[in-house]
Amino acid sequence: MASPRRRLAAVLAIALPGFLVGLSVQFSLAVLASSTAVGSNTFTTAAEWDTVAPTVSATVIAKTGQYLASYVKQGGSYYVYASATDAGTPTSGIATITADVSAITTGQTAVPLAAGSYTVEGVTYGYRSASVTVDASLSAGSKSYTLTSTDNWANSRFQTGYTVTVDNTAATGSDIQCVNGGATVGTVELGDVCTFTFSEIIDPESILAGWTGTSANVVVRITNTGSSDHLAVWNAANTSQLNLGSVNMKGNYVTTDVTAGTIGTASTMVLNAAARTITVTLGTIAGSVVNDSNNNTSAWSPSASAFDRAGNAMSTTTANESGTADKDF
Image (cartoon, rainbow, N blue to C red; front, side, top):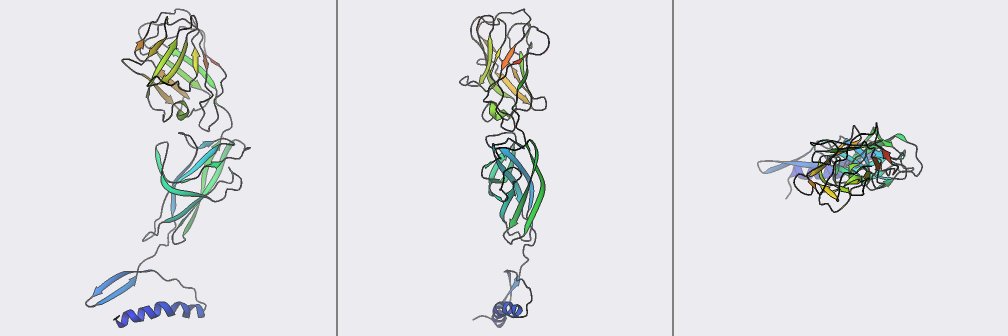
C-alpha cells in the first residue's frame, strides 16, 4: 500500500495543474526523476530540467563529390554540415537542426540536417543535410546562411554569420614547367620535376578519386612521338590516366614509350593549394631515353574532367610554358 506521503504527492500531481489553470496562473512541472529511501519510506523529488538551447560549434557547406569545401557554383549541388551539442542539466538531447539557405537556394528556409558521421576536409561533423541544388542563376560572391538547433525540451537557438562562396568561373591552365632534378639537363631522369599551375585552386578529388592533395604515388608515361613526345600522369597501378590532361614536350626525349615509377622509386604528385600547383616528381625510369639539347616550349592540354573547388569543369584551353624557350628535364 502507498504511504500517505506518496498518496498526497499523486493527488497534488493531478489536482494542482487544474487548480492553477482555474486561477489563470502560468506554471511548469519538472519530471519526477530522483528517488531517495529513508528507512521504510521512499521520497521522490523533482530533478533539474534542460533550460539551455543547443549550440552549433562548427558548420560548412560543401559541394557534392568534393574534397575542398566552402565553395559552390550556380546550378551545382551541395550539403550543409554541422556539429552541435546540447548543454542542459541534464541534457535532453538535440531534436532538430535546420538550415536557412534561401540566399543560395530559393525557398529553402528550413532544410533539415540528419545525425550521422560525415567528414569534410578531414573534419568530422555530426549532422548533414540531404543534397540541395544551388539556384540555376546566382551571382558570384559570398552568400550567408543560418542554422536553428532545437533540443527535446523545445529550447531553440538561432545562429548567424555563416557563409559560402559562389564561384561560376572555370579554372584554366596557367603554366607548365618541367625542370631538371637529375644529373643531366635535357634527359628524362629520376628526380626531374613537372609543375602544373592552375588559375585557381583545383579540387584534388577531381584529379584522383580519394586524393586529398598530400603526396601520392603515381606513374608518369612519356609517349614516343618523334620530335614531340607527350607526357601524361597515371595512377600508381598504371591502369588509369589521371585528369591532368597531357603535355606536348615539343622535343625528342625518348626512343620508346617510357614510364617513370613502375619500377624502383615511385613517381609522386602533391598539391600546393596556396600556389595553385600540382607538382609531379619522376621516379625510376623504365625505357630508352635520349638527350634533347634544344630549347623547347612545352604545351599543356588540361582535362575537362578536373574541376575547381566550386565544381566548375576545367577549361581545356592549352597552356604554354611561360618564359623563354629552354631545355626541359
